[in-house]
Length: 174
Image: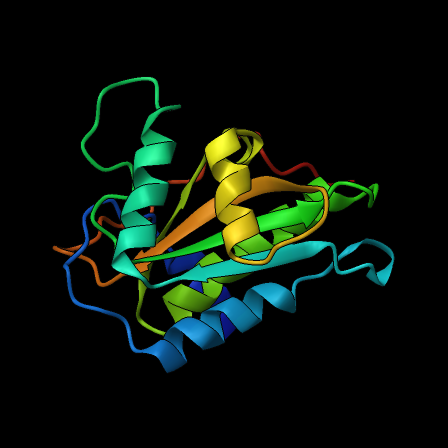
């Protein structure tokens, strides 16, 4: 059995090499909005999304992320021109799950709209730092938020590899 949603889920791949071409703002907005529609605990809507299309801020975030990357890499955002940062309100008991679901929606929405995406970790470390807190303040974000993930967006540079075979012993039926 298959449909458009299942096809999107099954064909989504992480992109780790992007073209420098910008993504139209209406597509970025649609992807961000999909993240805001993610399921969330008790209807609290704890996640917020920073939509970063400004190159200087994008580069600043990449440099901050690189500080927490375990190996030296020029750009942990793989050249993607857009970053959607998901943060979630730590006062909500389900904030980590809510933010993770928002990240999942972003990745699937990007795939469905023909945009490459990748979840880049270390958002927690980024926004626990003084520089990260400064960036949030500059953007007018107030509250006690934890970084959940960075969803980088852009058009893939090259072909994506096919889905790997699903490992055995991951589905149990009763």
